[in-house]
Length: 314
Image (cartoon, rainbow, N blue to C red; front, side, top):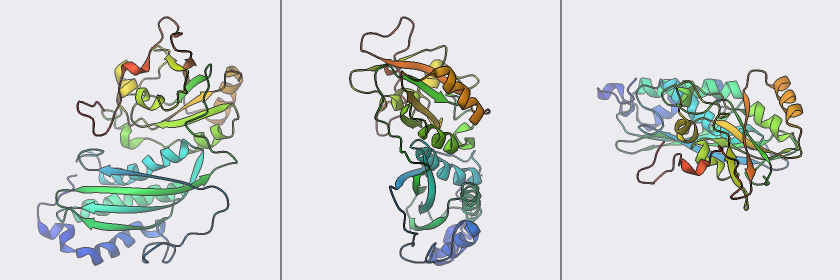
């Protein structure tokens, strides 16, 4: 469904800002509480939280994260799920979200309604109240940016730092060909898995795979170590090459380091009991520079996706 209307009467310009915001309230329905705990005031009022809080922000942009081939309901869901994946990577659970919408006056009202209804359905599924946002006009633009707040699901927050030389590297799910397979908007954020992993003391560092394993893994590798991957072990999506598995991006899986002292067989058994339907693969290990085993893969051979870089790959 194309997001831009061919007739002005079918576009958001026929509504104007005030009527559009009223429509957004209807489209979100029960996913957005009444003011002042939802849309309607200059700021939303949130209950006080004890302890640490988490916050992340991610956009979806027409022509970058979606095109006319992606259903608008799926675009709305993808916006929230991208942020939920970030929360999952730290062992968090969501508490509230706000959304900033930037759009051309030609955007189709029908497209936007389906976008918000998809967002609302996803918000209800994961228990995320949409408590506020903003609407702004920009010629030729259709983009939405969502800020998600959360708290640790347990006692511990897992960050990207903490891995050590000798630790094993694991990844959930499959990698590569996210766009051709439509996984980039059909994925399930690994919230339950991330919360479980955060409760395991042997899990030292974790992050989500959104820009490609090769690029994202660099943030997990500590000083004085390099990643040595087993190319045969990489869990590839159907038809994905090794380069695609390492560099395509938008996999929204979790990659983490497991302490060298951990019992990998016992860990695998505990995982299967907790998540029998979620694949888990040991893909390699952190080793000393110059000590990669023969046949192992250096992920630095692949670049992944990087914003604002000429000649980038996605």
